[in-house]
Image (cartoon, rainbow, N blue to C red; front, side):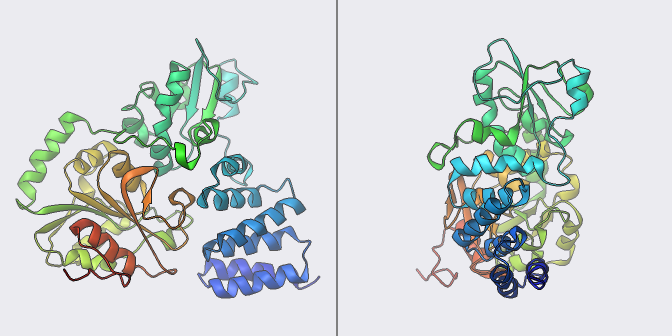
Length: 402
């Protein structure tokens, strides 16, 4: 089948360019020409996921898995489709294939086991470990670590001696939780341990399904002394009597799906038009420079340069009336703190936000505002404005007349 690989390659090229209709055409042509090529089914499945044709995507990835059972990529894409559609039990099992993806480092460096005389220590199976030490590894991005940190108290109930390996940025978050006091950020600080687990594997180990997601919020709280310092700062900086709304409009530029999940600040112009509202930028990174070029009825105060850690961000979040953000760590931080938060989602969202919901079982105080089509932010932004102001929204996305 000489032309099938070309169509499969074009499917992936067009998908990365955001030309999803063309990607699907080439992907379907590839599998029609060579239905025995796992790569064709895999690429078509990814394109269909981006088109939010999730059941068709799952079917494609299952076909790829049957053709090449040991190939990790379709297993992982299958996991994302299953998790997004709410089939968590099977999804968690497939999610474990992420460790076999090219370029993904092992969660626990082999040298650490050898250094502590623990060569051959197996991953934790979720059973109680009375008297043993469990090492947990915050293995993914900031948002993932915040989301899965809710499982620390559950792990601590089964094993009273926990140690958590995480990035330096995550230390104030992890240490604020029961079971997270022995967090460290350098492998040289790892204590002897009897078993280990990745933080992102805990939902599967605890058998989490949609109806059993642990969602008691807040499970994160800002440091009282830091809150007081920021209260003094904000009270002197922001106009009194105004609604305070935090903003984050862009994620980490190196994120694989940043093109879909981030937006220019100008797309949030309906928020800038609100009266008796002050917008507080929590944006970090290169995008925070946009705040100097945008003006509207609502004043915009850029706190990004002053936020030195997540501990600072948490202290500011504690004093805001609402947060509007794209899918970044701040969305998880605000949700974990129980703050009213409107999250703006791309048409094909990350699996954790599930399908067709205006809220999320992971964070009860978060509302979700989804693109109706790829790249179309207007309806989602108007929905976020309605969440902030309390005005109902019609199907058009505009506030209804009272």
